[in-house]
Image (cartoon, rainbow, N blue to C red; front, side):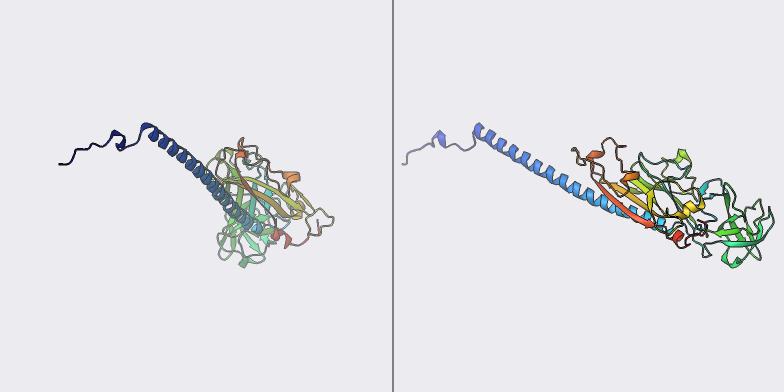
Length: 347
């Protein structure tokens, strides 16, 4: 018969309260460390992806502006038409200029930003216009030197032989049959004047920064001069988010006589046709912002660009601008349709 042994109490299984508390404490420290590493990693990831987004957005926005500005002036680059006000039958008016910086009548964009208007046509006829050989005041029918340059529904501008002062002209459309007619009859005789063809789909575009986005308005669809529509995305369509700054300057040929070289860069608004002919290039800057707000002030100073002397980049319109990172894009765009017209002998 074997004796009945009992296990001593000190061999009982389990953890003491002190051991459990120590384990919980070590676990909490591990969780805190893991969360800190995750937060740091996530912040770096967002900063990197935000910088990538800003780069992509800025590049797309710059390409869009470059594409339109390079086309600026096609069909309206003649000194006979440059600087005139072109009124549509609906009543909206656009300036006949290849590229206009802060054109009068267009509501300003966000604080410290510029507005750019671009005008160009898509006709196959000569940019110098077509001579009107016969027209009676008040008549819709006219004869031109080369009627084959026009087809039905072309948008055209008729200018009398003597340029009016101020130069206010009307855009109208053509009806081509046996004769050439326009839908809006010029009040004065156009005989000896010019008929300029902008084609069936002229582009009359305005770009502005609104609510931190690059937006576009099309004068053929909406009245871009209506102040009450600046917040309407159906009128001012956002085309690039988080593009917070647009600055621009004319490159002007200040030499007398003109030599076709941009000597001065500024925002001085051209007035006469010769002034517009001297504006042979545009220099612009776009500033894109990453979408990630940083609790720290990560940007100490506003970015600079080549046009700081007359159109500095100022981001102070947003009180928390220093909590974002920025990417600046700048370029010089020649207004080639003006250059191709040559140096005007009258300028």
